[in-house]
Image 1 (cartoon, one colour):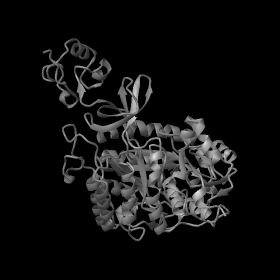
Image 2 (image 1 turned 90 degrees about the horizontal axis):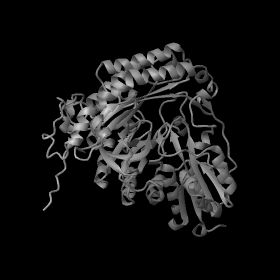
Image 3 (image 1 turned 60 degrees about the vertical axis):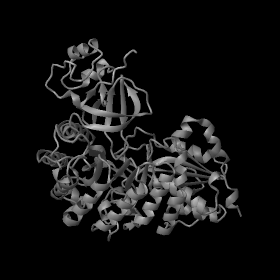
Image 4 (image 1 turned 45 degrees about the vertical axis):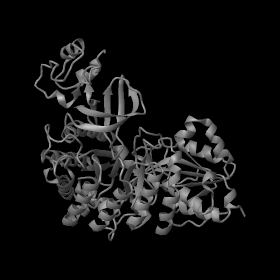
Length: 575
């Protein structure tokens, strides 16, 4: 019998991306935190638990020693929706096998990887279940498997799901592991779970495989935030649920009181938090219970931070596809839900909530508090050429009505065993690939670009943009949060720091910005010419005529209000 107090345990985070759960940096998912908490609860000392991300192992080969020497290696990973990532690169199947081969102790694999493994994390792909040469694969909750495995002396476990009391303990006890994440403390956002499972059964989705919704009570989630805050986390996303509005209810209808306890409790224990965002919100909930949903949306918008996004799973505006895939919301219902979220959450800091959609160029200069995002999925059963046109018509209708969408997410389906799409696989998606690419380009040009101008008008200020990489003489960065805007800033600046940025131009899914406020006496030529109304000639004159005593002192030769972008630092005078 192996004594838990003598165990050395290594946790490797290969990252996760599920329909209602995200864990690619700068996010950290619930899996490593709950797993660490289960280990502690089972008697393993904290100091005997080592946590590495897969990128950390790539960057420092010496860390593989922790994999080799561990008595218990735990791999956590799995991607069940396709995506492209900037902050980290999910583990490839060959890397996961290498972990199993390197481990000389017992090896356990868990997380959404249990649903299947594909050759790449991309749409129009099919997957199969594999053990990737691990000793054990957790078919239930990996954290429950870890607890039972340690309790059994590493002999085995029964596949089971953990209960609410266990997750409440493990979430608090495992919060310490965030301190070992490479992004800690300043550029790390913790994914928070309020529930798992879904009341609906869409053909492609793995979330119903968790069963009907089961909710963590507010004190459980708030206690976890309290513990994470004690370990330096200041950024949070309530992303681990199929529908935030259904939180604390019967699985379908909203419960505003539960939302008030949740959000109010989080703000009470983490008053200095810097990000509080969410992810999934079911549009069918909004149209079936509009009054309670409006109240819930108002509660969220009062407590969150700007730039928040409620992802709507429309998936398809085509009624044929909706029927064949058991999709739960029509295009008309989704349009009504978009309208309601805009009305209740589309206001900006500095506005009254009743002023939603009323900003414009001279209004408040922050992103709206809460906007809907639209998920569209292609390759579903029944898809036809008309499907693509119906989707474009829906998005055009939203734009023409004057509403805002924070982002439009267009993907192709991944097929997993256990879902209704497993029989169809990726055949339809592969057949329509050329059509899909043309349609995606049209949406980016016709909808995304003008919509982005509406959501983030020129002059919008984006605080705390984290500078991540250089490309073609431009520095790119993002804020922390749900679906943050990619921001391009002229010139190559020092990376891994944050600056405030003012928006000066728009791409399809990104913006160009300049540091805010921009100092006329130090700004580069590229920065000055990026500002609307300043061309090469004016920028050259501004540089030649330095120093400027004030913004008013500078001759811009434009009617545009440039004080929205620039300032002059106090000039140092010789004694």
